[in-house]
Amino acid sequence: MRVWLDDLRPAPGGWEWARTVEEAIISLLSENEVKEMSLDHDLGEGIEEGYALCLWMAEHGVWPTRRIAVHSANPPGAERMCGVIERYGTYRRAPGTKRFER
Figure 1 (cartoon, rainbow, N blue to C red):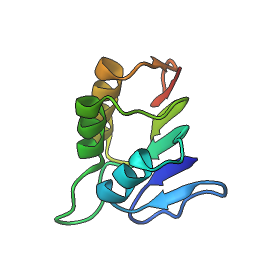
Figure 2: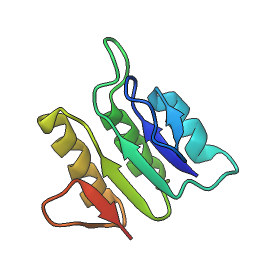
Figure 3: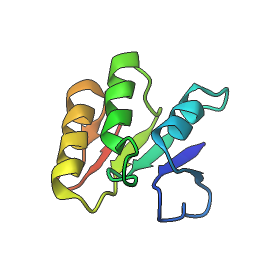
Figure 4: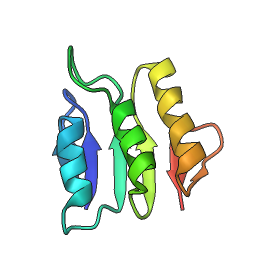
């Protein structure tokens, strides 16, 4: 399973669309193995940001099995998310990108 976290941009073909952090967490905890995720930071006014999902994954040690990327148009928010992924995830960051692979 591949999960796309974004409140506005529809998921590309072959991806499950999660519009909130809660929906993304349900995907991670489901019986379906999440192999890949792509995350947005800003998910709407008064809604938890994608950064909260990164913190949740770090706290619970639950990560996609192959890849994770940040596709946010918010540069400071995207870098905060990347920082959590770099520090607590078990990935290598592709140089000059916001993509991480095992």
